[in-house]
Length: 264
Image (cartoon, rainbow, N blue to C red; front, top):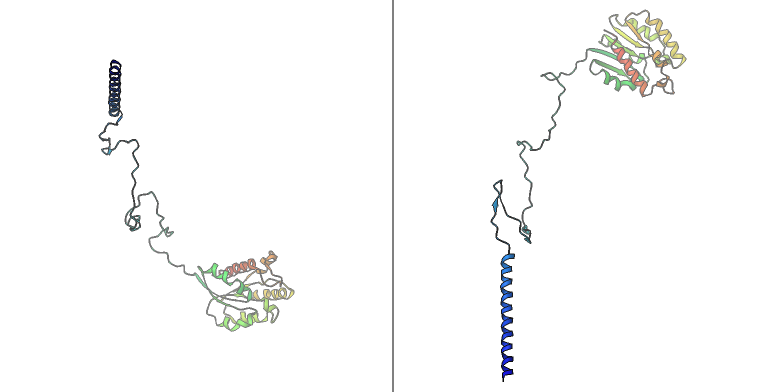
């Protein structure tokens, strides 16, 4: 009987000890939970006056969700009247006119009547370009022509300045005689310029000799020695010994300009 009583008392004491341990453990965990929970921190104003929330551990990043449908976002463009905010310099048109008044178109200083053959035809574009500002030219030219083809036009031309860039075809046909007749019929007040043709053959050389004798009797006729210029530049001449390559034609145009400016 005593043994059973002792056993029962021991069991009761054991249960009491276990319950006391459980209570102690629960109290310890509760106390630990109080100590480990993060205190609530009130937001503090920053120096700039903007309230900034403190960083929270394990706080998920905020996300935003766009509506499924809606207008496409657009970028606002400043009106044309507003100045751009960047330092971009806008290009401005440059005017080369220094005067307040608009520049007037150049007026040719002289008028000239020019008669020529295929050599003039080939040089005509360049001649017009280099004389556009100072010479008004009444041009008469055609391939294969000679003085006789233009005789009536020359005699009736009212211009006091004549450039007769002919002779290469004359040397192969009628020679210099028609020239002597024409010079005799033209008034002495006419200022005439004759470019001496390139002597690409013996006939042209003979023609030039005859022409120099005729010109000597007419002080109003001026000679430009184009033949001498070409003799110094054989690379200008084509294989027919008559016409010129582009460089030669451009030089022929320069000579014609010189002829047009010879007469005062």
